[in-house]
Image (cartoon, rainbow over all chains, first blue to last red; front, side, top):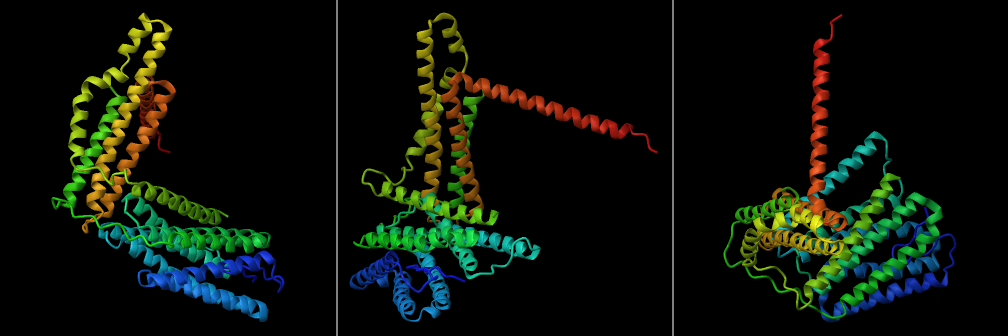
Length: 270
Length: 186
């Protein structure tokens, strides 16, 4: 199987590297090192440990892969996939960290997220296992399909988080917002490119080897901009003046919505 | 192929939500944007609505004024009348929207920190809210296309059509029941 490399993708058909591929690869390494230095100097790695661990791993991988590619090309493909799945596992930790940073101070919304995520996972797994059992969809046979499916699960979890934080108007600081949006874009573009690669096959290979590292470089630029200056998390809200029971608040809301619906109905019917 | 389309849809949905999040956060962080409506705003909004409701609704959406203008005023006045009524109807609609919005925002402000939050109830309230928003959009589209007088006429026509359909279905089910009762056993 021909791998597109995870971060700075390089075609595997030949051992020769095209100039733009080398440029993308080196640009990614430069941006990663910039972010790591920034995290080290400002000690943000204490605040966002998994994010910086992820960056550090990817940085080491990129340099290691470049060496392998240039000097021991025949080992590149198998090593690439091991590195890819290792990054995927740490990526799950980054997703968890984003959940913690966004919803940590909101136990209610956090509980909603857990329930929705559990529901989504059960639905996806049930459907996938059902399809495999019926024989309508084969078990993911390639590393591309497996990675695509795992990235799709990550995408689902980020969809849950984005919907809840939008609905509950949860304030997010500049830095966390940057990490969240950057990682979300990376996961979304990975799902898209991997899906197209798995569906279209070799015809998409040429586009894949360019698109995936390009998207990753764009995400790294976004992270660099978001983490360039520190902006603390928004101040925690004070508790409501009167400690209100959730049920009674829900009852009042329902009454308000019912009233709005009744007014709307009145406008339509005499 | 359908699996691939679902995955692409998931990716696009995530990108869309992230864009929304980026925009919403920028808006929330602007200095003149108040984070949430205060609790005191709700009762006054309800009260103002109650006071205006009875007298205004029939004037805005009812056919009486329009029929009078249609019979006694020149075309120019008719156009002006329709234009002004449309504006008032849109304002009315925006009041309903803001009433629903105030209700849900107050709920969100209180519930997001609550540890005893109930997902099913939250989902139901969210669906209720979005249904009101959807209905408001449909009403706005009708108002934009046909004006306030058309709204009740259209609803009346749809109601009549649904009554007719209901009658036909009832008739059909009665006929089936009658046929099965009168079938001669062999």
